[in-house]
Image (tube, rainbow, N blue to C red):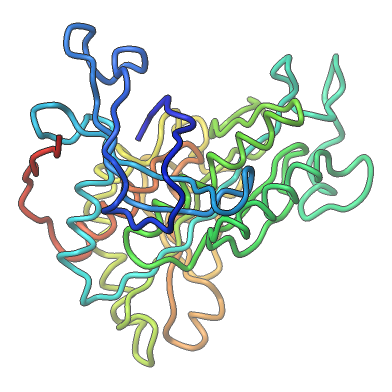
Length: 331
């Protein structure tokens, strides 16, 4: 889901996705196509109001397609959308928690001493006040931008490591989860750019005794959300256990640096679950354990993981794969 396109002028009207033109860009400049066949098609899939140019301007999320009618190698949305469609009767809800770190132009976490480290972790999580949090202006500007754009952002908080933050998107229905998270990431980078900060989604931005950054993924189906739902939650967790390696393979790069069994993580080579256990692969919230229905949290995904790959493989593991195909690209 890469692209280098920024602005395009269209006749003013209220557009649907199907009314928007299919565009293209130079995929050889982004590692998505060879130079001798570089055009990659952009097929619009979702529309959001623009918080930068304001109404009637819009942001358009697009899938990348090759000229031969196959999804581009970075187009993980296509397969995820098929899985969501095939299993839509399950009414899947997702909520993703995006952790990130704000860096200065020297790639140092904002507010950290030039030579050395801040005081140990402890007072920073959900912190307030100088010396505990930095760049709240970026965080709140991003929140407002997401609200304007119709992103289902549901919260934000300062994280355990200083200069690290988190925001939550969801609950979202099916493929909507990946769409909303990708656009929220775009908005975050765009706002941080204006205020002279870099956004890092590396899962372990600072080695040592500091928390890493994850993309904790909350999931439920209609059966899990009603009385007796714990049965379906436990069935899903057992299926996830059986495909632990397959999930880790798509849960983000450098995740082994984060999933060490320390700093509120499970070990990358072991699967575990438990009620209210933030050191497990899968956490069942205390409230869910008490009520006997609700949702569960997959704590394994890294902060740099692709939300379409996360939500797609959860659906595939819990409910089965669908036949792969490639629809022809429109020209």
